[in-house]
Image 1 (cartoon, rainbow over the protein chains, first blue to last red):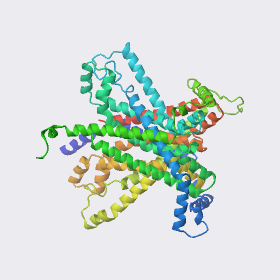
Image 2: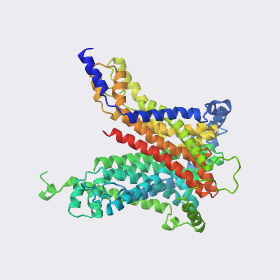
Image 3: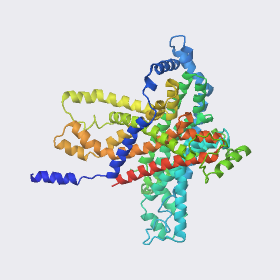
Length: 305
Length: 301
C-alpha cells in the first residue's frame, strides 16, 4: 500500500462520527417503517372506488352553493364571499387574532419572568459567579430545589398540547374566550420559559458577575444587566411562538369558542362544505399574514439590536 | 456636516436608537395585548369559574397527585383490560400515528425541501457551465423553486386538525387520513426548514470537492448534504415530538390515541383516569423532548 493510501485510510478512521446521532436516526427510521406494519393504515382507504366517489362528491360540493345549478359567475362569487365574511367570517377572524395576541402577551410576560428561576446560573447560590466550591447545603439547596420545581412546571405546561388544556379549561371556565387564551398562554409559557432560560444561561456573564461583585441583588442584576442583554433574543422567540398561536387559535374554536374553528365545525355539521372550505382558506390567510408580520418583526429586531 | 452643532455630533446615536426601539416594541406589544383583551371582553372576572366550574376544578385538580391505577367506573365489563395497560396501548397508538405521519412528512419534506433550496440551482455547488444547463438554471429552476415555495406555504398554513376535518369530509374516517392530516403541514414545515439548513450549511467540503473535480451530483450529495444532515436529523426529532402531541389531539376526532381516552374519561367525570392519561402523554413527550435536546447538544461541538 502506498504512503498516500495509508494516510487516506488513517484519515478515514479518524473521521468524526457520532454514534448517538446515528443510532437515534436509525431508531426513528425503524419506528417509522414499523408503524406501517403495526398501524391500521390502508391505501385502499383513499383509493378504493367508494372513497373516490366520496372524494369527487366532496370536491363537487366545494363549489360555492349559488353556482351549483348555474355556470360560474364572478358577481355571484363575490356576493357569496362578502356574505360569508359579513355574517361571521370577519368577526371570527378578529376573535382568532385577538385570542392569539392576548395569549402570547400573557405567555411572553410570564415566560420572561419564569425564565429566571429556570436558569441554572441565575439560581446558583451566588448568581453569575463561578464559585470554586458549589455549595450544596442550606440556601444553595433551596435555590436549586426552586429551579427544578420551576423546570418541572414548565416541562409539564409544554408537554400537554394547547387543545387539551383548552378542553380542560373550557369545562371549568365555561365558553368564553378565557379558556382558549389561558390554554395557549400556558403551553407557550412552558416553551418561552424554557427558551428564555437557555438564553439567560448562554448570556455573556462577565458584566453580570461584575454587578454581583458590586453587591447587586438578583432583582437588580436582572433589571440592569440581564434584561437589556437578553431582550432581543427573547423577542425573536416571542414572535416565533406568536405564529403558532395564530395557527392554534383558529383550531381551538372547534371546542366551542367562537374563533374561526367554531364556524368551520359548524359548517361541517351542516354539510356546507363550500362554506367550510372558504373558512379554512380564511384561516390559512390569517396564518400567512401572521407569519409575514412575525418575519418582519424578527427582521427588525435582528437588524437593530 | 457643517450645519450640525458640536453637541449633536457627540451624542451616541446608535445607543439611543437601540433604547428607543426597545421601548417602542414593548409599548406596541403591550398595546396589542390590551386591544386583544378589550376585543375579547376579557376581564379578571372571567378567570374565576362559576360555582359549577369551581367544583369541577376542585375535583379535577385534587386528583393531580393521585392518578387512577384502576378504572373509576362502578361497573367494568369482565373482559376489560387493566387501565394501565390501556394507557400504554393508547400511548403506543399515539406513537404509531405520529411515526407514520412523520415518515410521510419526511419524504415530502426531503423532496420539497430540496426543490425549495437554492443550493441546487444558484451558486457554485449547482455547477454545470454548459449552455443548456445555464439556460435551464435561469429559466426552469426559478419556476420550480417558486412554485414549491408556494406549495409549502399552503401546506403549512392550514393546521393539521383542519386538514383532518377536510380529509374526514373527503374520504371518511380512516386511520390513513389521520396520518396524512398530520403529514401535510409537517411536510411543509420540514421542507421549509430543510431548505434553509441546506442553504446555510457550510460550503467548505463542497468547495474542496469541486476544486478536486467532482461532478455536481457528487458535490451536492457528498459535500453539501452531509454537512446539513445532523441539523436535519435533530430537527426531525423535534418535529416528531410535535407530531406526538398532534397525534394525541386527533383522539378528539375519534381516533384511538391518548386524546380520545382523556376526553372520554373527563366527560365521564373520571378525573383520576384523566391524570393517568395526561401523565402518560407527559412521559412520552418528555422522553422525546429530552432525546432531541441531547441530539442538539451533541452537534454543538
